[in-house]
Image (cartoon, rainbow, N blue to C red):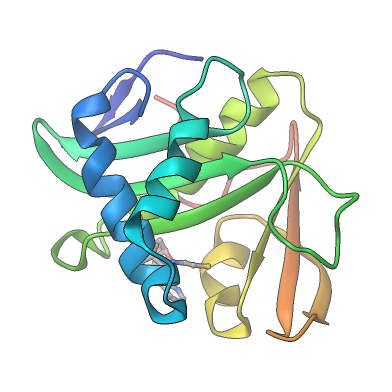
Length: 171
Ligand SMILES: CC(C)(COP(=O)(O)OP(=O)(O)OC[C@H]1O[C@@H](n2cnc3c(N)ncnc32)[C@H](O)[C@@H]1OP(=O)(O)O)[C@@H](O)C(=O)NCCC(=O)NCCS
C-alpha cells in the first residue's frame, strides 16, 4: 500500500498505518449505516478488522489533520448483493460534519480508486443513492446502472487511466 501523503492541510493514510483511528472509523461507519438496523458496533469492528488484515483488499483509509480524525473510506470486495460479480467497491465514504466541503471526501474517493489501480485493478465500482450521484459524477465516476435493488442504488465505475474529477488526490 502506498505511503500516506499530505493534501493541503490534511493527510490520507492507510488505516493499517494509523491504527489509533480504528475505533473512530468503526464508530462512524456504524452510526452512519448500521445503527438503525440494530447491528451492534462490535459487528462493524469485526468487519473493519478484516480491512486491516494483511491482504491488499479490503482496506480502509483515514483522512486526518495530525491526530484529528476528518473522514474515512474503504475498499471492499463486495458491496451490492444484486451485483456479486463486480469487484472491488469503494464504500463507507464518510467525512466529519465540520470538515465537509473542503475536498476531504473527494480526496478519499480519489485515493481509494488510485490505490485500487496501483494494485493492478482496471476498474473500481461504487454504489450510491440517487441523491449522492452529483458528488460521484463530479469526481469523474460514470453511472453504469440506476435503480438497482430495493434501495434503488446507482452503480458507478471508474477505470485505471481515466481522468480524476476536479479534485485530485495526486500530489
Ligand atoms: C458525501 C460526503 C462524503 C462529501 O464529503 P465532502 O468532504 O464534503 O466533499 P468534498 O468537499 O470533497 O466535495 C467535492 C465536490 O462534491 C460536491 N459535493 C459535496 N457533497 C455533495 C453532495 N451531498 N451532493 C452533491 N455534491 C456534493 C462539493 O460541492 C464539491 O464540488 P466542487 O468541487 O465543485 O466544489 C459527506 O457529505 C458525508 O460524509 N456525508 C455523509 C455520508 C455519506 O452520505 N456518504 C456517501 C455515501 S454514498
